[in-house]
Amino acid sequence: MSELNSINSMEPDTNETIQDIAMKLVTEQMKQESSLTGGPSERTIFVLGSKGAGKSTLINRFLDRDDITRPTLALEYSFGRRTASGQGAQKNICNVWELGSLVNSNQLIEVPVRSHGLATFAAVIVLDLSQPDRLWTDLQCILNGLKQAISKNCSAKEVIEMKERMKQKVGIDHEDLNTLEILPFPVIIVGGKYDAFQNVDSEIKKHVCRCLRSISHAIGAALIFYTSKNASLSKMIRDAMNHLGFGSPSNPFKALALDHNGPLVVPFGGDSWEKIGVTPTNSERIGMNYSAQIPQVGTEKVAIPDDPAKDGGFKERVIDELRAQKDDELMRLLKDTEIRMKFEAVQ
Image (cartoon, rainbow, N blue to C red; front, side, top):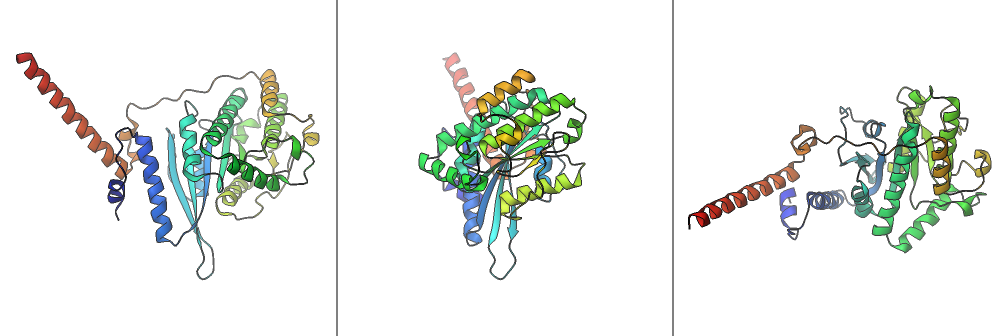
């Protein structure tokens, strides 16, 4: 069945937005993909974070794409496919969502969570280390958005079950386990633009590293600093995304690095309050302490083109055809209204 036939089979809803239609299209496409391939194994990675921190570049390298990166305006979907070796091997699919801007993003953050649930969901949070005065503002916006999406779209039972699984990932015998506010899915926090961060004042480095180590530990996340100019860090973050998306390698973190004078690498459960040098705390106090040391500015505004839909880099044939159809209907309605008004004026 063609994509258009699939769309026509959906119940029409005059209140649907373009976002709702796009959600249905993606869901229907994934159902068709599953039926054609005999039910592949699927996982989902949601990449979100600071503007211009390198999210699209990370995704392109993860998916082995040579696309020219351009600013992501809203929410973009792509996928990767891997087939395990051996006869009759199962196909593995990784759904990849990327959030372009954190401005008014709460509804968009819900989309991947609502589409896939928590069982095979993971998040990669990319922060710009070169802007310490914006780091907590962006991170707080992301964490609040994810928590809100979970509370609105996931049952309490599902959240409890996934938190228990995450405790296993952190380490059921970890000394700090009972003091953590673990999120119900794997999270990797990526400190992007590490090459620029190397030139930052040493005291600021200490505050940034303590903050990111503390929040990563508190929510049960892994932490990696990254720059494309360092081959070993590039390979490590690619391995980490492969781990989240396809389960291999089983252990992408080949080292533990906690010195603020170098790039941090902290696996799941690899840190502790004692190693960080702070008493057990929570995300609210971590943010307050960091903001007291490095005052934060607001989320950066994003310039949106007059009509992003006309940009050739964002073509989606089915959605574009639907939009063209709606535009034609609107023009006909406007012409009918104009003719009726002229007729009534003559009367």
